[in-house]
Length: 237
Image (cartoon, rainbow, N blue to C red; front, side):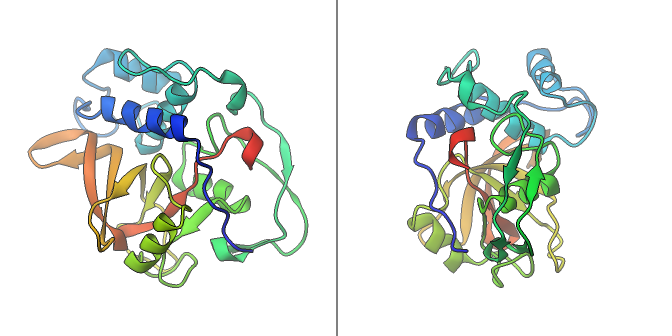
């Protein structure tokens, strides 16, 4: 099965990037599992389900929620609550063969997913699996699946081809295991250079030189990237 091009969703993608940027500089009091220094941000994370744990994907969930619905104090959302996944858990037929996304489904089946905003879940592996089932995970690994490191040439191919777009979520693997495992997730912004060896992302539960655990704009090496989850809504999966 060939990959599907990303949905334009231009206005929503703009909101996602702006809302993500509005949280850059938010920090934890004493490490990733601790409360956040800004009590409003802390309350927002808890409102989407976070509680004293790694919070990179909770940040993505929060950003998607606000972009799709009400926004925050700095950026308006698109105000379309009917298009999200909140409290709308259901069975959806899955593709028979998703091998190009790194997973083969041997027979027609149905998958039950738990999602509130896009196909995100609080866990990075479960998130990738959800997107994979609907052929919305774009692997840029050298072998096209879940092994080996991220390939700049594949990143370039899929970004220039409209398969990877700003506002998609991006998955990282620091250890380079084979098969690779998801260690971290953030919001993809843009390639950082013309050679596509680096990508600009906004991430929660990360660090910056001389600064505490928090939300930061990062420039990441593409070999550390596993792939990208395409932004989707209920009507386009």
